[in-house]
Length: 333
Image 1 (cartoon, rainbow, N blue to C red):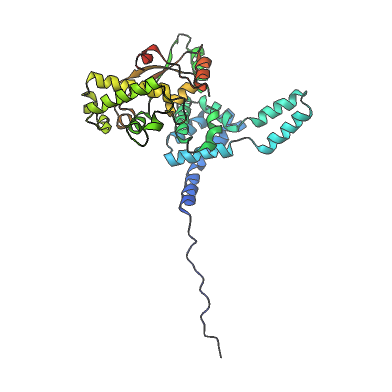
Image 2: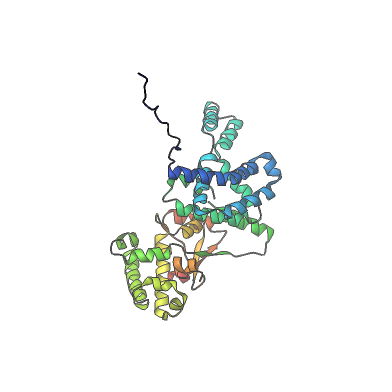
């Protein structure tokens, strides 16, 4: 008798794709032109045509979405790192004959990440310095969640110093180098400080006297804002605060910047400038009234002063857990 069973069906349905992998693959495809331009800039031909290629890279970096920027950082960490085999070979050659200068030079060149030269060449492009600063700011925000990016972050230290010294050579009349910087972590810290479940971590590491002043200032500010700090996100409410409430807000900002910046999870922009050797100089009220500025810091911004003769000192103090700041900020503490 003939077999009347139907042959086994073969599914024509495509295999299910993992959503995260699909998203990552799409982001990588979108990043391909940018990554190709980065490699071109690092090539010998790219060095000759550097300004045009670098300008194109800057435009592409500024156009990245948050997800694309994260993937770009991943590529910088993975694809623009030293070749392990080349580093090993150079290290063995140097260990075998350390007296030969060529071996030390070869090891130094092999160990330097290509991304470091990429940053140098980008820095020479019009708008390149600002783009790198913005890029590092975004990197610092991601670093607590992506510790593998620490190597990338290690390359932009003292970027500001190099830029300031270059400007001083080009414009000898310049004497003061100062930024006007956002304080993106301030309001998040204030909300933690009023949350009974998070107040301990928010005020951790602060001296007892500073903690007492912070608690008092926070109570005063909450009272003026109707016990709702979200009210400070509205410019009319912010502008109508009484003088003592404004002073309380400034005091809280000063306490936050001076005491929390050296600690893990401190304000990312402040950490960037302090790690580059800046001094916290002056708070500016209602300096950024855009919705983002109000949401992040109730409109406050900070001047970071770069004294070229004291940059190393300020940097060393920050590494030791102390923040160099002006007398104006000391008066608020």
